[in-house]
Length: 305
Image (cartoon, rainbow, N blue to C red; front, side):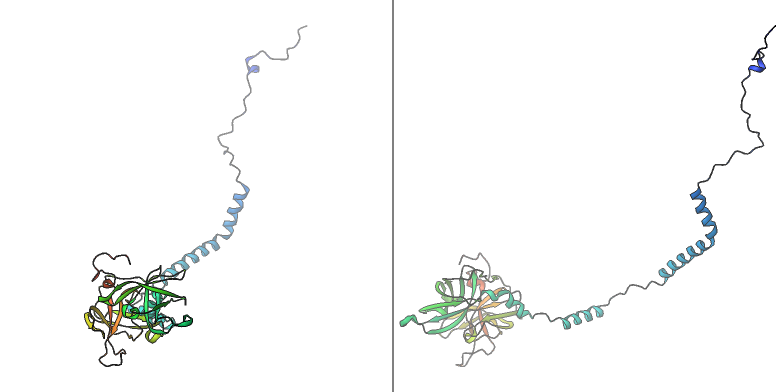
């Protein structure tokens, strides 16, 4: 008896079954939206109106600030002048003479002279004058008539140190002398010199010295003349002098005459007084520092002192 076959041998039975394609009437499946994104979209939909109103409010505020922004304040010359006056009234600035003295005070010295030594090494002071340090190793420029013929010369520096000194150079034609101190302060500073000063009538000048042995004393004035001549009590004729009206008196001789920058432009050597009083009545004389250094009006090289 023939056995029944488990597999059909017909072509139909051997055909491979394919999955049925979706019907053309069915729409494709939509992608699944992320939960977080869907939550934000739902939140926006619920508050869309409020968010829109808030945006318009911010925009309006920005426009209002731009429209009502105050214009920058423009200062006039009067405003600036008023501000300067207020500053000057509230904070007092040092005077020109005070600034000049501040620049040179460490170089000012008092020059004391005495006669020959007496017993017990005591000295009688003969006169007093002034001087200015021109080299920080202790070289001092002064007036020759202050130290000429002295038995002993002593100098007193700004810090109070006293020292003997000797004359190392003379310039009789200009009534000038250079001293060398035996002992000097550790921090001794020299004054700044201006050999070519280019002074003019009316320029501010300051005289510093020890009038009547009192000082250091400061007086201010102006240049009242140039290239003046003056005959001293000894009959010596001094020429090419600076005439000035800053107060000087006996004892001021040898001190510096300074310009507004605190630079030495001359050395005080004399004052004019038609009486026998010998005190200041408005005219002082100084040797230009260029002549003192051997440079005449300021041309040429300054020789070593």
